[in-house]
Image (cartoon, rainbow, N blue to C red; front, top):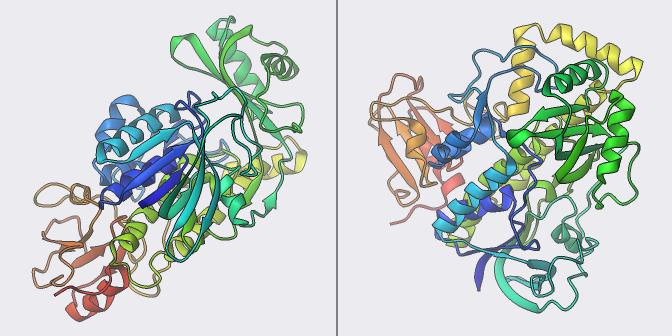
Length: 498
């Protein structure tokens, strides 16, 4: 029996696979597509996701392939400057295409021992108290020419073989049209798309200076418009669609792009030779539950929203970071009661907050008089550093704080990287274990040493006597009292051994 089958080999599924392998969990990742995606709908990692990569020793793979940005405009295109004093050692956005992020995470997962099986679609599942039976369809046998299934979990490429596998758990990371979610019957309430935007990568014959001038003029009134230069003389083109397509799974045509570019800019810039074309809407939906017994949801399978602020990929990666160690603890037999349920309890409210801020951003980008008046007012407010700081921390995930109850101000927050006498904090978190960082030298994690590391270090940047960090870097306890610590350790790390 496989420990975990992950449906979907996007950033969320691959991040989860790597996290599970840190703890020796046997993982199979399945994906209906026969090849990794060439589309880069997402374009960067926010500060919290950069921290996640740093905590697992992966950041050095990403930095040479990306560019650091510290510019304003991440909240609905408002704000002219990057705020000072963000609570992170990585105060920037790392611009890196989704295609590259997926490749690096796939390399990490396979190096750690995960199996990735492409051209293999999850089309059925049933569960009992001992595990989950999944039905897989081999799409590679018939090729991918038949296109996507209708999402009801019953369709597969004609002629493809069917296999059944057993797993202790299944995690659906299979996108907004998630087959896993539909098979579970989990509600996905929210709002349908009211506006739609075309997105693609293509060449353009117009001179770069002309493109820049026209785009700057159009964006004075239409913020869902842009031609951003890319390598090899290509452009990332974003333009409002004429309406909301009846079949949202069908890719737009190059002629649709030309028509809409002419409608908004008076020219189609001579666009041609598209690398890929897609569309996205402003629908917002949130799964009612992230867990049904032995099946869980993460990433876009659990929540969809407009891409304003570039939060989607980051939200999914951070879902996986929260879930991985908890699911591994359950499989390895030491999880305390309720630990796996805390995944929903912690991440569902975070997604709800993202849906709220993307709804607000879409309204602020409207061309209607009322929203434009609100936008002008908010633009004035963002000149105040406190407002700019607050909204950027919301977008980048820095502000996330889980509800661990009353206690120290650090409780529930992710711990920023701090300097130690020997190295830095995040260098101690690569193995995905808990950590007691102790300046007193008087504390102990005896009984939990197989799950929690204990480091005595008096680094000056840590301004509390000691902190207990979960494997995801969130502060589970802060203080200097051994009895208090003994009361907290079982909550997150189970019963002591010995």
